[in-house]
Image (cartoon, rainbow, N blue to C red):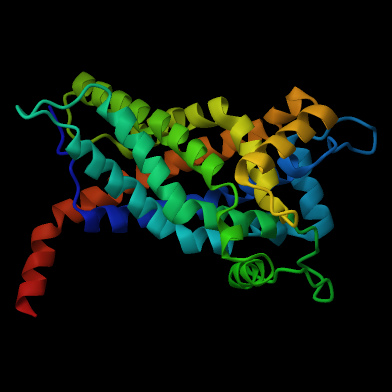
Length: 314
């Protein structure tokens, strides 16, 4: 059986926003650990001199800065998650609808190209400024349990205001090219993989709606694709967004400067710092996102007539 894939913009807004909010709440600590590992110039080590794993880095953050430190930057993420997910799912459907021949036949690889364009769109409109603020907050090494340990950036709004005041509005779009490339490659892998596996399971079981655990499982698989391919892009992007640009270098000059410094001082392996927590952050995040999105959108579709009657009665 074929399922009705097309969703209204309002459904995408509500279902996507709900999915993104749940993803942020559940998976943000892993993102904080990932950012700390990516920003470290030297590999973190324990008392015995062994390299710290992502669990070890997380425990060190908790011990030195309190458990709440794992949620640094969450405000920036949640503030941007609703428009981000609304843009992602809505523009994916919009671009996919455009990729149809005159006879109504869908283009080959339409899920890939629609995902790629949706990734660029969300990067430009939401993700880049959200990432700049989030990374600045996550990079601060202060104890959230000590009220006297006052950081430079107090919260997401204060961070955005301070960055704009000190560095100009353009600082919020630092790394926009790399962010677009990362998001485009993420969604170009994410959506085709998810829809291929979804269609396969629907045909295999002759059903139109997958159980929640199956949506989560194929979301987990599709979510792991992007980070395994584009982690070097994410490393350079994170370094660029974390630091100011007092010399006023162009985006390409900054890219070459940061890229060269990493190769010279840390070696090529540094481009895969944080890849484990990134996969563990993005893959479960997509599992949550798709499972919640499918559940909420299905509920909205099944109750759409009731909503219309209620609105008409008013």
